[in-house]
Length: 225
Length: 225
DNA sequence: CCTCCAATTCACTAACCGGTTCGTTAGTTG
DNA sequence: CAACTAACGAACCGGTTAGTGAATTGGAGG
Image 1 (cartoon, each protein chain N blue to C red):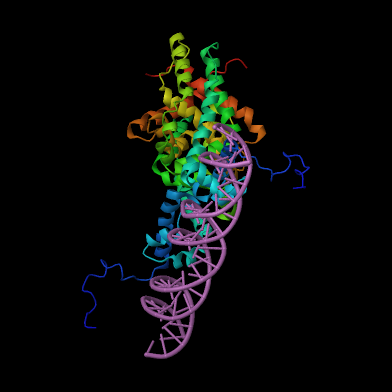
Image 2: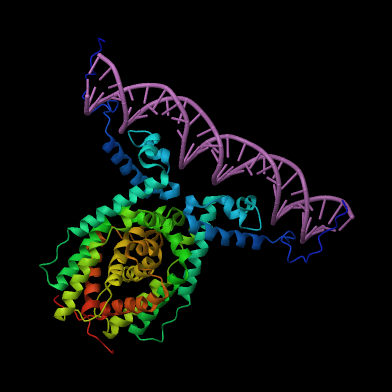
């Protein structure tokens, strides 16, 4: 055959497709994450995911086995990312008040930086967490944030700075609430109250406000007991 | 055909259907609320709504004009219910601290009592509040809770009990956050942390905790400024 | 160069689902 | 009671959508 290899650079030509299972799988996961986050589980279209990939719908079924399993895989990866960030948090060198502020800020920043993750969690709750329940990987995934928080609370109570006897999981829920709400309910809140909770100008104020509130609660003088 | 009309009482026989536009409309709205809350907008089935009604799918289109408009009507009614509850809140006779606790408790109780409403709000956020934006009725619906909160904050700052200068809308978001989160993220939280945030045993503790936290924040001694 | 299998393409379908067509009936009004 | 209309029901439709069967090919190993 006279025709030599096409003179284009291989990277620029999408037709030159070297077989790469890992890359195909990863690309499907990326696009699927966007599509599920965009439209919800039922609203997401497998055809649409395939179209925005350099591969075909058949590959989605080849690698993931179906829409439901694909969504579970998307959740698994999304959760592993946030757990990773929590794992890297190091507050051992900080005093309890500074440590709790640091934890609040990390949670706050991570939520704001990952709106797709927030949407996926909302969607999974609409489906009553059935995919998490069905995923061993997700169920055995602990939460480093809870452990860190527990250590901070113990230290604070030990030194007497923290006056309140709060449950670790409750406090974690409390902190997550505001971080989650700002992002998750951004659109209805904007439509109803005319304020974009995630606008740049709000960021610093909200971050500080949540920290102040948590610290105020933990260090409040015990009133009538 | 000898068989006479069935001898059952008319009330017990669903086939004896007197025409009642208002009732048919209301019944469709009730069932649609459940179905949309159950499965999300895309997951909800118009056929399913019709089947669980004493009327047919045709009537849904006759009264509401389509799936999208039906969902908007569902949202309109759901929001008007909570606004009504807020309107009835009267804290004029309470001191600022008691008043803010009362407001927190009303918000808390209403969220817990209306999980379907919470789900609808989550769903509407996935769709970026496009139905609220398209509904004049919803856009002109203010929020009595904000007004009440503003009056409480003004009174508290006036008397010097509240030491912090917080924005009304921010504080409203803060209070709503935890109330919303408990219900909205109940399932993923349970699946991941093994605790049902809406279990009966948690209720009083959470209610008190949120009140304590808000009060602690508002009345905190101003530290280094 | 041949073999072989994972990776991929192509062609297809059955079921679903929002929306509509068209005819019917209950109840009101003159 | 005749005429009229709002309310209603059954059947249908066509585009969409998740999911498959089977043939094909790239590339690693011998």
